[in-house]
Amino acid sequence: MKLEKTYVESAKFENIVKALDLDIVIKAAWVKVAGPKGRFVILPKTASVGRCDLSGFTVEMDGVKAHSSGTFGSVEQELEFEGRTEEQVLETFRAVCEHMTTLAPRELVRRRRGKTGAGTPASWVAASSPAKQDDSSPDSLPAAE
Image 1 (cartoon, rainbow, N blue to C red):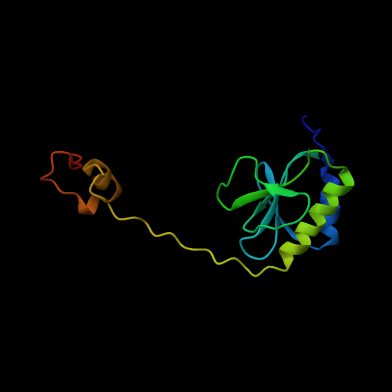
Image 2 (image 1 turned 90 degrees about the vertical axis):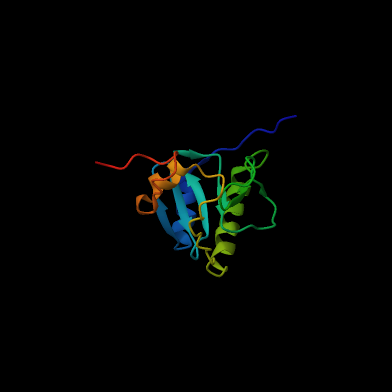
């Protein structure tokens, strides 16, 4: 039996964010509630909310589950909206935001640009770094005139 999904007015989430004095980052379709560096609670920018993702941290508490789409990027969990009342969803949101503020800033690992592997076509190598172009290779791009 599928549980009914609860949708909550976005203004109610906004009131909690304001009461906790948290910063927000507005994107095209999402609003990120910002915690310490690299930690966010993400809400859709809609009139009613039926999804809320946790990015950069995880928690173990009622009302939070593994993300329905699996892990992508720094998002591993989401709030549970199915079979829960509006009050339960909002209380979980408040608890998650409060927990997020207690976390240390996230250490972001800088990814270095990878080196060209043996299987990389020479034309890609030439296109990405013209200074290193090898004119002797038949796969090289022609020199610019």
